[in-house]
Image 1 (cartoon, protein in one colour):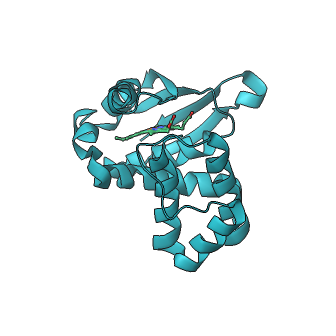
Image 2: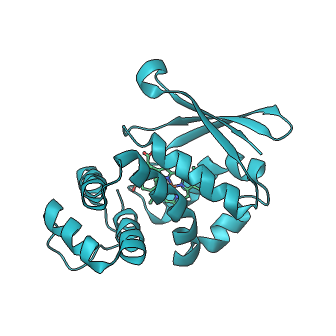
Length: 179
Ligand code: HEM
């Protein structure tokens, strides 16, 4: 994954739990550089290791780490120069969810090695959608829950998120999002 993902994990931990926790994580995963380069690709395993290390050091489940990270990502990207892209991806939650593939498509222009997830949105009620999440990567569904929570906050919606179908059982992760 691109370095900005790892950098966002570093930021989340440093800002919310303190620099010492980050240093402990860095040591645990054996990352010896001083910083991540946002526009450089790193092995996915490093990101998984960081999530695992955060889970151990902060004593929260890996799912909770991913959820917190997903929520943080919405604020982080807005701060890191992607605010305009977020703005033009939708002025309400439904429109925004329908543009998630377009959003990552645009990012591919500046990050050619991006391996983005794929989302399919189906309207199932006035303020209710079914969101199918597909990825070449495993184990990131909790991140999607956090992302959806962060988007709910961005649009001032009190949203309910139900992880309806699990990839392990159905081959695809499906979420019901209502607000
Ligand atoms: C401007 C905002 C955003 C930027 C710059 C961005 C960029 C990225 C980048 C760089 C990755 C790592 C993938 C790679 O390096 O191959 C990623 C992954 C991901 N993004 Fe986005 N993204 C944005 C917004 C969103 C939003 C709003 C969602 C909401 C659902 C989302 C869902 C995901 C997921 C679930 C992944 C994990 C990778 C996977 O599932 O395989 N992203 N994104």
